[in-house]
Amino acid sequence: KVAIIEHPDSWSASLVGDGVIAKFMPVDMALSSEQVYEAALAHVRSLGQDGLTGPADGIATFVELSVPLVARLCETLGLPGHTPAAVDSARNKHATRAALKAAGLPTPKNYLIRTTEEVSLAGE
Image 1 (tube, rainbow, N blue to C red):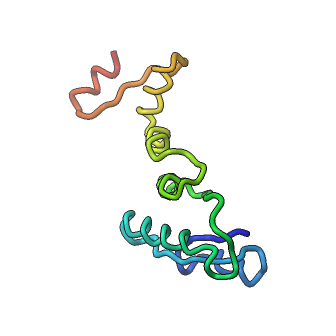
Image 2: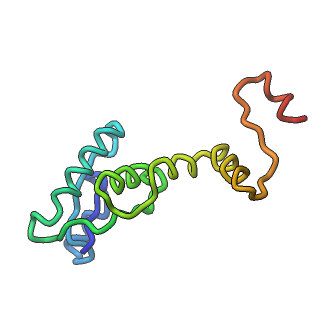
């Protein structure tokens, strides 16, 4: 059975009435990332206690900005998924390129520019 965690005014809340999902669990996504994490964690932990769902078998997202949240939840709950460290590396282009290069894979020439003085170095 599918349960969705989303902002309280999300269109996906109507999916319960349509019979597409078992449960809609509102979380104010405007809160701090730690508050969103804690609220989502409480919702996931409550699954199976409501007579509508069972305990979570997995967590997925189609929202790129929620990938780090899902990784943290999966790690905390012992569910399959990417580690937070892997997600952080994958979302950082420079870290991804460094990991690919370290693995011996071809990568385009790149340079992480942190200051205006480094611009000319990057062009060399």
